[in-house]
Structure formats: structure tokens, C-alpha cells
Length: 50
Image (cartoon, rainbow, N blue to C red; front, top):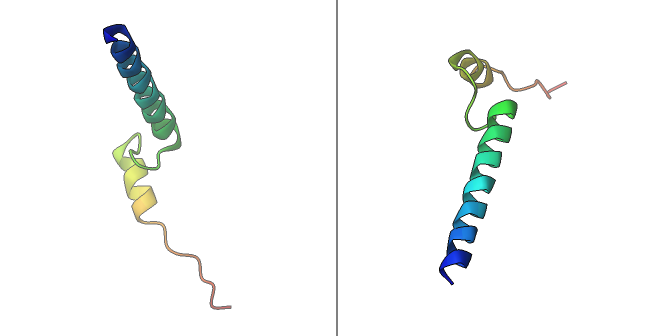
């Protein structure tokens, strides 16, 4: 039972690491740099009034 619990923790930890790696490469939640964060924050909405 203990080994199954340890295996589950390792599995969840590996999933978290993969999520963070993928997210850093895409830069949605955690931008890789402060410049990227400013670029994402300063993008205007597209003008759809035409």
C-alpha cells in the first residue's frame, strides 16, 4: 500500500513538472520573461466593429 502511495505521488509530481514545462514554453500562465508578460498584457483587443 505504501509503495502504491509513493508511486501515485511520483506520478502526480511528474505530471506537474510536464505541465509547468509545457506552460513555460507556451507562456500562457507563467511567461518565460517579464518582457513576454508585458507583451501579453499590452495586446489590444481586435477591432470587430467593422
